[in-house]
Image 1: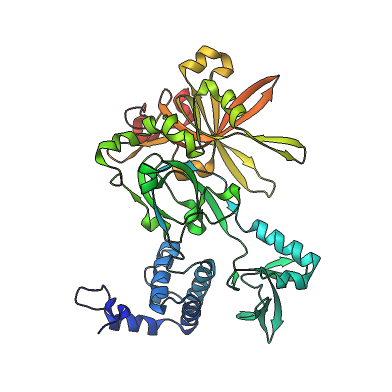
Image 2: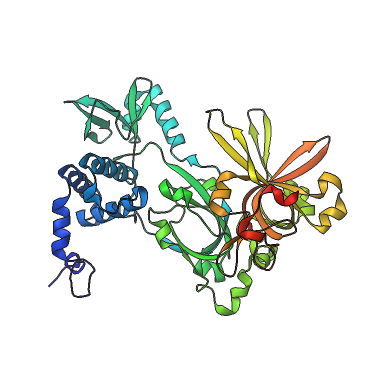
Length: 457
């Protein structure tokens, strides 16, 4: 009787790979690459074949390599090291934990990416500074030391040997003063000391909860690694695979983590919604329905002429270094576009890197009846990350092509409400995460996407 592994390689339709080709492929890998596959297989329990298949897929996507045999051995070793280190916190095939199907719509994406491990490194440094022995005994901090020309790691569970030469900094370590430290998982293994991620904003829920429980709610989907730069279609029904929150902190109860293969399992479809209810998924209907969305969803449905009231009612306050700090709520608001800057304005960061900020100005009849002059429109500020990943200045037409829209277009906007004081007046603005419109609401730009500033001349 064949076991499950055998069935994967049968040539008679039960599998998609000839067993002899599979064995030959493994034998042809350079020894140092195979050594790395074997080490990961022993650690994760996944087969060497599955790891090598994931590696082939990775280098095709990351490096455009479709024939690994044409590459130099040292390049393959470097690629393998990079991929397998990156994925040590999960199985390299991308599964890394049980996932749950969520259904709903993307609202947008936060433009700024952040290092999820920054606080953990800070804890490790502070613990080491206070008492190195206690830091190691905590089980969360490892200390690199040199042994026989190689790096080894002192941990609470003993010494972890590596095959990394001491002539180079350890791949999982970070320098603190004159030492190299690393982060240690609950399983006692070292893992990468940086983990860059970005939050994507999702309005949805598990299918059963969407229709019979809490309904659609606002979630932060945490995408890391290569996935942090995933392009999305805002407002389009979608099904995604995520991991439920595990943090005990209230501040992270809305965060859904993800696996490495997240993009492969994201499907734009409305088939999860009963046919007679699909018309209600229209963002111009759903995102303006405060009764359905706002009550439990963590996002406030409001109007442009009521932003000041929304801020006062839903702001969060805490004591900062320079006094009380107030943060506005996440909002959904319907508006008309009065003007926009799609070319962006460049700024310089303290570290020398540059970034761009874009703008969109919004108004409504109610707002114009309430105010005139500059107060008759609300500024929306858009980070270049949002522009690159969520196309806020374009809409997807019925032919599935992206087209630029111009002023007078009706839009739905998702973002964080902000308020500043100017000569005793409260001036609202929005940090925009996503913009949605469709072919019926958009004033189409000629040429399929001319959203440059020249349209206002």
